[in-house]
Figure 1 (cartoon, helix red, strand yellow):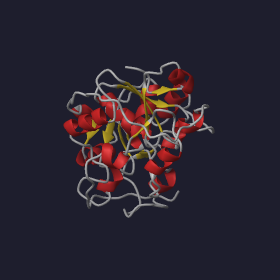
Figure 2 (tube, one colour; figure 1 turned 120 degrees about the horizontal axis):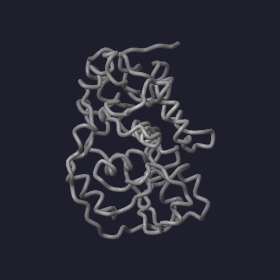
Figure 3 (cartoon, helix red, strand yellow; figure 1 turned 90 degrees about the horizontal axis):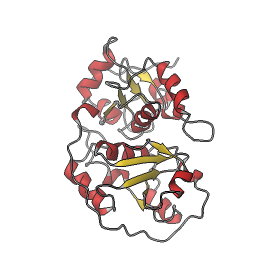
Length: 274
């Protein structure tokens, strides 16, 4: 499988790649409007809420995984089929595009983030509507070892002998100082703060693999197997998962329901303002 992150030079050298615009905003701005105002030529727009998730609920969280057959049908409609190579971008360092990339990689599709996102594209942008070419993606079950349930994440975080549980949200959300959603503030007791922004340099590009490996080693991770990552709703956590792959640590697990499920479960909540 291809590396989880590629640059714009790689993309220009692979004109047959399917380019996906996965801009999404927690503050309610429209990703579709952003796409319409200017996108990488030929890029299809992917809706995080409608294309990469099942309907939200308090019981399952804001972005539950769709059934594999539903996801495959959606990708087929967007022109992503068996044998495709997909390069996804957003304008937030990969915060939302990482969700598409990680899901496709679970399905066995070659997919990667465009390093630096839309800002790294040095060509002209297009406002032309994009009509995807017909494609067919074969549905495959989500790998059981790649997804963690709420109970598994909570038990793992509470066990000092278990692989770490990482919280990919901003540190202020982890500490319980701020919470931009309707959920109570705080984090899963025992989880470690690992903001996705720590995977990036000051220009919004991924740190080199060796530097990422050092970063995760400082969190006690030299092998991603068994490591569980969560965030607000299972979107930005994929950034940490892809960063660990880039660092050569292998594949970790996603707690899909994340804080949007856990915070309303009645399970203990930790907070620290230190």
